Length: 385
Image (cartoon, rainbow, N blue to C red):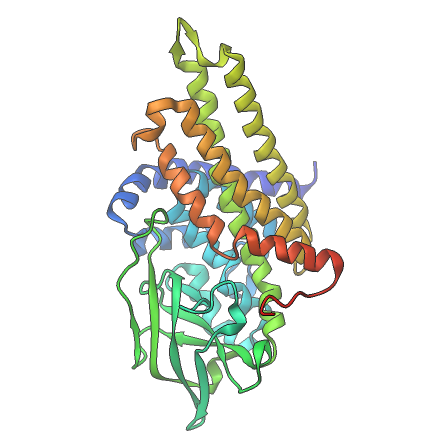
């Protein structure tokens, strides 16, 4: 067995133990209260090295392959998604845009605090009239006084209002479509930056979400991470976030399967365990098939990201499959749990609620299907005509 395989298994085992012992006990209450994990709990993740797995060692990270970070996200995602989200954001979220596309000075300025857990960074892409059609965004960053002034609004921003920094995709020039879009980093507390009321979502209840509003927010030119015209590069790196997203869905599906396997062996009806009924065996087999198919597609997509950026086709195949698997498998888990599946006590309904959220975030399954055909045929389709 190679050293890298040993390391991969060791960090997965460590993550599983910490997640189960420290974070799983608080997961239900975070969902009920709709609150994120505390700064202390986040910094503990940093102290353990979980927030910097896929970042360079010179900034405090481990310099490990992305697949190791995904393994940790999966173990936490099974039992405490608010904690898993912090690992997801640090290793596969906007910090990877900084890692891949920012200047060395910007990396030194922003990455160490994210890796330690002292600060968090959220990505702000979607707008009220620009969700799947991201290039319709209207938020602008106009040159002024040696810096830029940002105006506009962003919607469905995970960690909105909570994050310390926002990587804002916006129009840095008047060029049409994607040609005018770049990315600027905005710090919480900058004059003119405000937030909408917290969203009351079906799931994601320990992951805050709120509108982010920009009213003449002045940022220095040093905060421009990606200039206008490099939207393609931004979405190339965004494929890493989609791998993290796929992993969260996989974690949800795997946990629903694990809980259901235990339940059908223990629960008795008509004088025998549920697993003795052929109809239950067929449903359970379908759950296993779907989870394993999603896992293999994700592993294939992630393998290409260990040495660079992942293949967009492989990522869309993995994300679409994992997102829809999590919804179906948690639904089947609820069926096999009967009335117990519909209670909060067994945690299945929480898995099902969260599964729907991860299917929307980062590009819906419908949009992934369009990307699959686009990448497969090597041609683009204008949805506006």
